Length: 492
Image 1 (cartoon, rainbow, N blue to C red):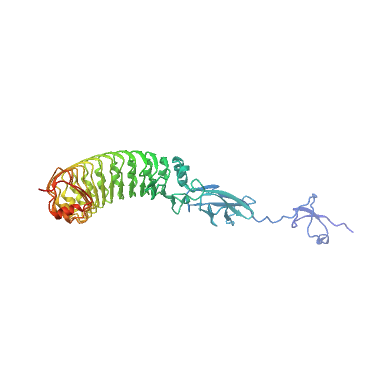
Image 2: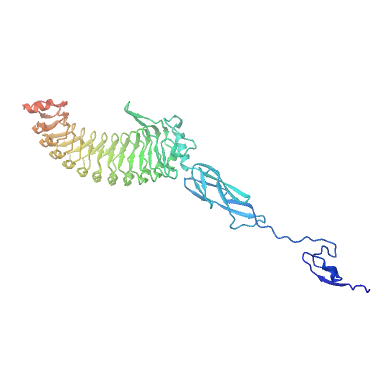
């Protein structure tokens, strides 16, 4: 048989490398499903389909974060990559917090502060995960710690929860808002009803300037303690402050002019210290102020007329200081004023007639000064006045009969002046009057008016005057009913 003719013919079979093979009889190849060899003697495996992408790494951004208020938030993101290092867009990520009392996390990675502390945030995709750290802390905590350290905190009467990890609102004397920021700080001494006095809370030492960083503080009450040193000017940074009560301490130095920055301040109570220097005229810009209590200090200089701009002021008390000069007529603009107490200073000049405009005034005490001139008849317009104390000055002229219009007056004290003339009978119309003192006015003269017998007095001084008591039996019987009575002779 003729030998088969060998013909080289290129063929390509699935799964085989391209090569040239001898072609023989077709039947010799018919039973082959695939060839495993080439002419060079090598063997090739079949090509398999690539693996499906799967998460192998997760990266959280940011790796760390700090929140400084409750309910504050931070958005975390997670990038997922597969085994080839390619970003897997849309990969499913599960978020979790290790401590939900500190921080919670949403399904989108939004972290919300829940309380002070540290928590670990985990993002998981498949078998891969990454972690980040979130710290929640109030910036107010460091301020309170500074106060504790500066004022002998270990010896306070009550320091419950101070310096612990408890929420600041659980610290004694501290109130916080919904964001955990301090809004009220009250470490004042308490009233002891048995001993009828205040028991200090135990704060001693200086007021730390860090208190000016309590950005949400509304009320600061540190009164009735043993605080020393100056009032920090930084307290003028407390933009939301409404009440500042530092009275009955041992504070020294000036009243800071920076307190004029406290646009929302309603009460400034710093009496009972040893503050010195002038009353800052800048305080006249405190449009919301209703209470200005500066008494029992060592303040000096004049009363600033700028205080006449405090049209919401209800109480101006500056007793027992070293104030000089006149009483500004501008104080007559304070039409909401109920108490004006300037006792025991060195004020000079006349009593401004404009004080008669203070229709709501209940208490007017200008005693123990060096005031001169007449008692303004305009004071007779003060229908709500209960106490008029003008004693121990150098007032002159007569007692105005218009004072008989003061229907609410309970005390009329004008002793120790240079008043002259008779006691006006109109004073007998003061049906609420219980204390009347006109003594130590040598210029007063004449018989006491019978109209006084309509009064139910508990105190009546007319000693050291030129006055005399009518010998009328009814008048003498009336004098005998007065518990505290110091007078002169019976009229001839």
